[in-house]
Amino acid sequence: MTDQTSLQYTAEHEWVLVDGDTATVGITAYAADKLGDVVYVELPKAGSVVSGGSVVGEIESTKSVGELFAPVDGTIVEANAAVDADPSLVNSDPFGAGWLIKVNFTALPTLLSFDEYSALVAE
Image (tube, rainbow, N blue to C red; front, side, top):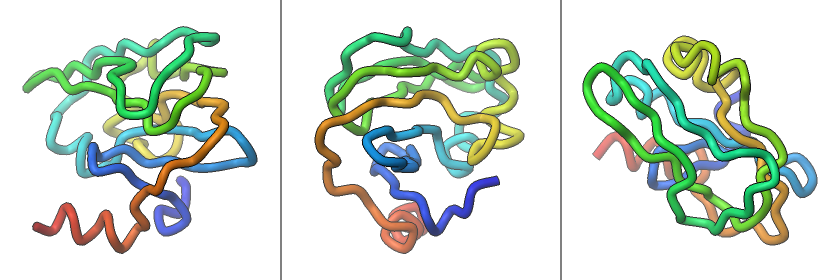
């Protein structure tokens, strides 16, 4: 499990782990809990060009359908095949094996810190 305080966050309840010019993206435990049991995940294909803030996938649960947003402009370098095969990883390990996409980006927008995100979900 990733140290959640070292991650950055979006207001759309996604976490971002930056490693050089690659951002690994997943949804937070808060989002996974609100969705309920995830039964299907649609992720973009490697090589897809994405724009920050645009919808790039869907997460379907027993309760609803949620959208996955790209937090950065860039190119998808990997989609998590393990989540495709077992969508429940999004619920059981959202900050680890349940990551969703990796994006090679050129610029990193301003994202929320752990404390800022914690305050957002506490509202």
